[in-house]
Amino acid sequence: MPTDPRGDGLLDELIELYLAEGFAAFGVGDLAARLSCSRSTLYQVASSKEQIIVTAVRGYFRRAAERIEERVEADPDLGLRIQVYLAAVSDELAPASEQFYADVAAYPPARELYEENTRRAAQRVQDIVLAGVAAKALRPVNARFVGAAVAEVMAAIQGGRIEAAAGLDDADAYRALSDMVYRAVELRPGARA
Image (cartoon, rainbow, N blue to C red; front, side, top):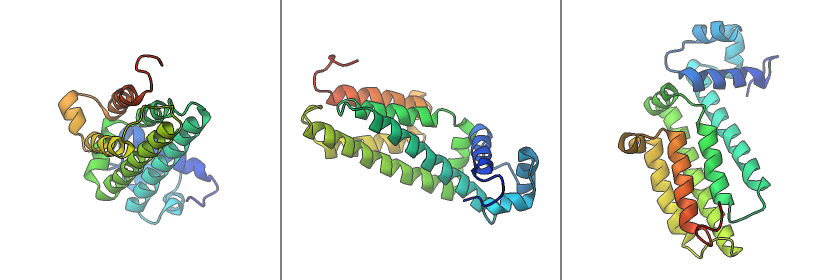
């Protein structure tokens, strides 16, 4: 967590820069120049270039998860929450550039953060389906199976396999997953739009 006078603003700027351009090519001096701050200010975010990257990537996923949950909780329809959740994931991933995803895949600490976030998201899908089934807002499906199947697709998205097979970036793949999963579990197929 940054302790500099700019507060979370510097972390926000780092996240925005990394999403737009990736992070591997930036040295601390490059970051300081791009963000109009000193190296010592950047080192208040974290103690090394590597830790600055981890802090920014973790911050991105944490903030995205918070915004996703706000959208889910705002929808009173337990039957629609699965669609809302996966569409929100898609929206949160959309600003990330190909370079950001390439850097995440190539840098083990960032890749581990993405993998952990994907595992949490798969568990959240299972929880949403369980709640929807219990409320009779979704068909009585095996939520553990849905969660496990979605986890496999999420892992394939995160690993770049969906992009290679279907030509969909992560955001578009989550949008397609949202449609597919919702149509599979909706209470009355075709009744909701």
